[in-house]
Length: 304
Image (cartoon, rainbow, N blue to C red):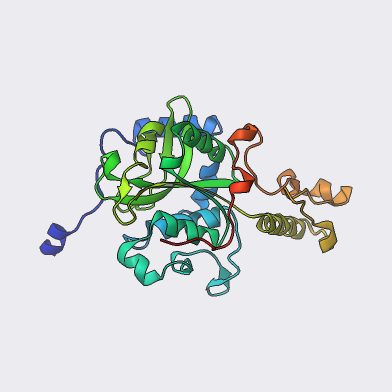
């Protein structure tokens, strides 16, 4: 027993430049962030959050959490009668054995994500800190998109090297980001400034010879339609209403439109069910939203 304790670790202490969300300061930042409505993405991530099951699974763990947070149906059995994204199911671009041995790279994460959702991959050397901040503001102000960062722990003063984690919120006044660290056994969720987080994306990954970056992940148009249909079915079942024909449920080329129901049924349903499926915050200016022409779906990338 003594040998095990000498050769293993139970958590690590955050460096002083990072603020644990469980500290007094972190709790204040969190409350202010939620009140300012720049922590909207936290709620859906919170409902699907899980600690990575293997030290090398930070990438697939972050991705599975985001896909579940977006309410995307994997259309694949998990366990028993349930469909749910889990780490071992995300093996279309690298085997589970390979990921367990050495994790995944920036390009491999992009490949995996594109197998299951719409993705914008942004290597840090091709973008700016101002764009990074705008994207953070966009995803944290809505529930329809999420950000995963690929960063260097060492650049933040932490132990370890490359790591993936989803972003859970933004404190605009302090210009700080809430990182929901996927390795809860090592570090708690923490706040870091946008600038220092941006700098942590810059170091070159020795595996690829390239810098790291971040990803913007959303449901594709068909998935958004499926999400809205499931929500309507659940609400109608709860209210004893009859589900309209499939012809009443349609999507345009740019967005999923609200479903049409009769006035009696509409009156009995929660307003949120009749709203379009989650999309980027409408208050974000056009240039700040995820550009549609850059969104990729389907695994056609070179996973190197």
